[in-house]
Length: 339
Ligand code: UT7
Image (cartoon, rainbow, N blue to C red; front, side):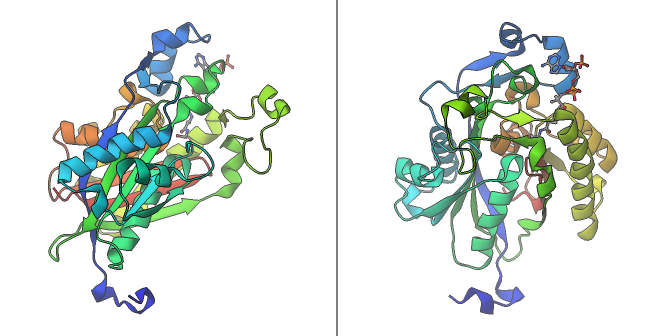
């Protein structure tokens, strides 16, 4: 197939046909954190909306969570791993720098026919990975793409730093992308943006080529998440609403047309601020940050699961995803829910 010769008419819309999620069983509550750092359940609830988060046991990697989520998504649709064409894993906590988590998941699933890769976009990794998968479906290159958002944030969190350890949790979610039928809209549009000048506000400074692991990098705690919380907060509040407004506007919609808004779960205050600016009642906004915290690439598929459980994802309903994350990365996706 010569992709660059395809006309708009030949492009096929993509749709999500299955979802699977997984969180490790161990729960770390705000009360538990009170014994680790100087904090309180009241402060964490009031400033973030988080009550508890799930934490992986030692020896459990992102590929393990991703594989469990993937198995559920495939079982949901009755698709065999061998039918997959590609696997895309959005993560900032790969099991190791290489091979990619996608390779590890491919092997654990037994998806011999699939190629794949990891995508690094922090909290926007799920929307970015989803859009990559969509492109393969749209061109007709692939029929079944598995898109996974998964992170074991506890592996890069300093549990003596109260500014970060209360926020993050571990989790994974996977969706299956397939071609939509001619009359279906499926995934309608996306807007992605990067502002690389924000890199200093949220990062993990060591472990890559610039600062490879040394005794010094370990002593200086450079293998943990470092965040300027207020800078990220201000950027997120502004950009989540901006990007959501723009994607709705350019498709002829307003916040009132959206039946389900699934935002990245970083802070309840960011979510409520965004919903308010979009004129969206909170009944249509998915919030599960209280139970899972910020699972980075996992939040949006985990929130999709919550939306399904709450009966808020109905076939044909207009669904908006939005995220802001380290980079800075910004993403929004508009779709009609397809099942
Ligand atoms: O998903 C990736 C993107 N990340 C985000 O979107 C995170 C965005 N940022 C945030 O969500 C918030 O900035 C935080 C939740 C990280 C922090 O909340 P904040 O209201 O911005 O707190 P702050 O950093 O301004 O700190 C206010 C006070 C400080 O004390 P002083 O200096 O006023 O005495 C902090 O030391 O709260 C203190 N503090 C805490 N107190 C109890 C900070 N963390 C804690 C804590 N428990 N865990």
